[in-house]
Structures are given as structure tokens and as C-alpha cells.
Image 1 (spheres, helix red, strand yellow):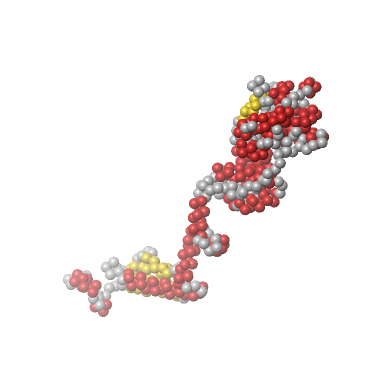
Image 2 (cartoon, one colour):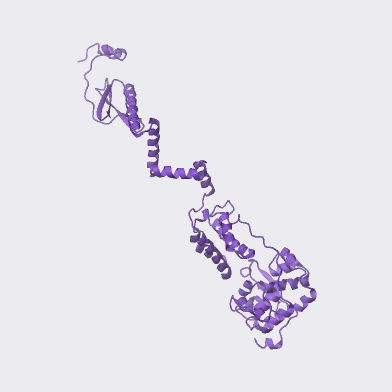
Length: 432
């Protein structure tokens, strides 16, 4: 039973020394967990509360050297302070056993906890980090990753070059590319992919340049292959396989300088002799190349319906022209005469390999067949008559600069009149 003086005693007891404090009978601690945990590194010392509720007691319990230790305190602050001391001492003992200082042990535990949350073993993380710093030559890994993430934002990472070829060719076919052009692209890009079976993001300009150098061949041939690779990289950029705000690695490779070469043309006598021994299926190919200047690939794609002999024009559609630009080519009187028996429907030439059949005719007659000789001949003789590089460039699908540089003054107007004055003989016409 409490006495009448009990309230005063309770009021003053907080400031009394221990020997004057009233003695209380401690009750057993209620079951339950600790009220707080005191940590030092990986060591945790729990703090418990027990008592009758009016003057609670606090105690800590832990193991040291395989012995259970239990200490009791009158205030929670005392219990916390002693728990901190105990935790540090235990942690120091662990650190000593592992050769780590307390700070090092704490850093180890913190790092391990972070990596465990990410599912990454500590050793793997350390090895990868060390390799990255070596590659970066000591620069900040975080800065490098941030820069990479910014540059490749929205980019489809990991796409390997060989895996993109079919998608690339399908896209070009859908864009209306000719079979011949698709064949060229496939040949060039496939060879490149075989040399670099890597993610396209990993391929650098110096690798492209070295590969092109190893191809050998004429400078013009190397530039043609380079153009195919640039087309492929530009497509990959548009499809988000490469960063859209940067030039591609293929664009960083310079084209090989092609020196001025002598433009090979036929004389009127030579073209006349060629037409005289050509078979009927060869004549349209030779005549259109020599007297209208179409490229061999353009002739192969040309329909007879595009040859309007009444209006004396050839209508070359954009999908048939090499430059993907529509052209209207005038038909000369002699070309009309050569084509008149062939008016109708279907292809002008039966197959795309006609040039391979026609070229040997020159060797039979004792002279060579220079590259693009029919087209070169037409441009050279045409400019001698019209005297305008702009007009001939428009008809031939070329630039005035190229026309002026390579074809001007190769022939005379007299020779040009002879060239465009070559008509079929009656015996040739009867063979159709």
C-alpha cells in the first residue's frame, strides 16, 4: 500500500542519489523484441526494456568470446552508450581477425549490402570496375557511363551488323531500289559484315578504312564499296541502331582521290562496225547507249513503252535512273531509225547481262571496249553539237562540272555530225 508521502517521494526521486532512492522490486521483463538496435559495422547489440512501468529498467545482451553478457541500466541513454562500446569492441575483434580496421570493415559491409541488393557478387563488381578504370586510363567511370547514356539515349543497343543485313535490304527494296542496286548493296555489306561480326555501335572509322584498303582494286571501286557501307550506316542511324545526333563512323572515312583518267570513246567508224556485226537483240543496247547516253544498268531497266518514237523522247523514271531522278532524253533521228523495228512492250534488252555479251564484239573487230564507252561517246559527241554542258548534263543525268571537265573538246562538231548520222542499212533492218 503506498503511504501518504509517496507522491512527494516519487517527485523527488529523480534528483536523489542512488543510496536515497527507494528500492523497487523488479518485475520480470515482458516478452518481446528489443526496443532498439545499436550497430557498429556488422555487429548489432540490442537494447531491451523491463520493469513495472513506473521505474523501468533497460538492459543489453550480447556475446563476447562465446560468453553471454547481460548488463542492466536505469536509463536508456546509459544502455545505448554501453551498447555502442560493446558493439565497437566486438567489431574491433572481428576486424582484427580479418586484418581489417573498423572503418574498413564497415566499408566492406556497406559495399556488400549495396551489391547484394543489386544481385552482383562483390568480387565481380571489383574486377569489372578495375578493368573499366584501366580502359578509361583513370578517368571517372561514372562520368564515362553518364556520357555514354546521354549519347546513346534511344539507341537500340547490341544489334550486331550481320543481323541487320536482311532488314536493311528489305527496307531498300521497299524504297524502290532496283535489283541490280540491291545486288551491289548485298555483296558489299555482306563482305563487310563477315569481317566485322560485331555490334554496329562498336565499329570505328579506322577499322572501316583499314578494311577498304585491304580490298585492293582501283580507287573508284573502293569508293563504290565505301558508298554502300555509308548507305548501310545511314540506314542504321535512321532506324535508331546508331546515335541520331552524330555523324556515322562510315561518314568519317574519306573517299580515295581518283585521278584524272582519259575518257575512252569510240570513233564513228568503230560504232558503225559494231552495229554491223551485232545480233538483233544487241542493237537496242548499243544504239541507246551510243546515241542517247543511258547507263548500262538504266538500259537494262528500261521498258519499250518508255521509248516514244513519235515524240522522239525516252522517258526514264526515277526508279530506273541511277540518280533516282526522272529524265527525259531526246531521241536523235538515227536512234529512232535503229529502234523503229523494236517498238512494242517489254524490256528493251532481254537480260541485265547484255553488256557482257556485247563487249567481246570490240575484240573481234580488233579494238578494246573501255569502261562506260557508249555513254562517254554520246556525251562527248553531244556536247560538240549543243555546246552546252548544262543541257548535256540534264540529258545524261550528270553534273555540268563533270561534263565540262571530262568531255569538253574531245571531239569536233564534224565528227559529232558523223556520229549521229549513222543509220541502219536496209539489210540490217530486214534482219529484225
